[in-house]
Image (cartoon, helix red, strand yellow):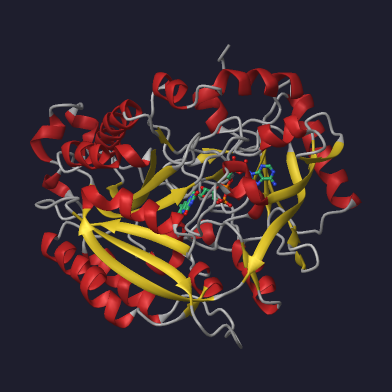
Length: 502
Ligand SMILES: Cc1cc2nc3c(=O)[nH]c(=O)nc-3n(C[C@H](O)[C@H](O)[C@H](O)COP(=O)(O)OP(=O)(O)OC[C@H]3O[C@@H](n4cnc5c(N)ncnc54)[C@H](O)[C@@H]3O)c2cc1C
């Protein structure tokens, strides 16, 4: 066995997008001053050792005691199997953890030396009378879209790609670009879960609400989700509008468009070339088309996405191509992408479209949640911090999330502009150290603006930063300990930030 496989994602760098040439001297003298020269170029590429698990960062190759892939439908057999696994882990003092696509980047779905379970069952049952769908927790959003599209329905909130597990989405409380919505947890009606004590419970806003709020964005630490009921909306034919503006003016335009009530999907982009970094913004909003009859089936990734992906990759350490991509997106894009498209077609995009298969680099995401009235200051903070680092930023996407007043580890206590960044990182010690330094600097600036950072990515934040960003973390830990006194549900996120918190 090399990497334990989940539908093949972890056997290849398709887990994320990838990179181009080796950075070599690019990281240069400045970095060398900060790290021991002998280890600076040490490779962090995974070895592919047996009985290890990794995640989308490719930087978390970790031994596990056992890894099982569960494909059966939710039912007595599945519950019995999970109970046995949990009890064995407890008896042996090992951690137990469930994952789906393992696209989190800090070992959030990896129990070191423990019992790792991957849920991988595509069961999805739409219920059009109640506008919900029932899903196996391991169903990927591609499975959801395939079933909902047939009956004219669409997910209400999901991430920008379709590869992720439905329960995992609830467990990180992810968000996307359908508007005006908060994180996905707000669209979940009911969760059936096995508590750490082995009891099967139905949790919702009416039953065990405490556990519901803890599990939403609780990173799999409060129990095993085995079935879910989630809201859906009608699929619609949409038409896009593209508007260019100075980056500092973006937030009022964006919030204004969303508050108009006419827009159902929206995002923004900023230019990333170093010379004019973050000076220009593009806002893309989608409204209902006049004709809603005979919606076509949602295709997968189209030719345009694949063509855009090639330009996207060619940006690596190539400033003229960064300019070209901005022109493609802000100038040419509106002309050739301006046609009507269904909501499901927009959501049905796999991560793999952007993969380039370079084993020497990995793609690392960051995300910051910024109060809209502080967005211009956020632009300045990024201009100060990012181009001065050695990291190659290839993209930023801007989204809108309404307030989440339910989850304990909430990242959007008020409405926020969600700023998702993608970096291509060399897989060496020096690049990792530089990335950590840059991330901490950015987090400090965002915290000063009253914002937060997103938890499923690299564990670069300090504990002090984490506690400032997530002021209810101690409460989360106290309630988790009551629920799971032996601490059997654990992963690397727990180990990095929550273990030992009193
Ligand atoms: C390319 C890329 C794009 C992304 N885009 C977005 C985006 O648009 N919006 C956004 O919000 N996030 C985004 N993310 C982050 C992503 O939503 C999270 O990393 C999410 O967890 C990925 O789903 P997964 O199936 O890979 O989860 P995994 O990494 O497998 O698991 C995530 C967490 O869920 C828990 N979990 C999984 N299944 C269960 C279960 N059955 N019971 C209990 N706990 C469970 C795990 O223990 C773990 O803590 C993106 C990530 C990548 C790599």
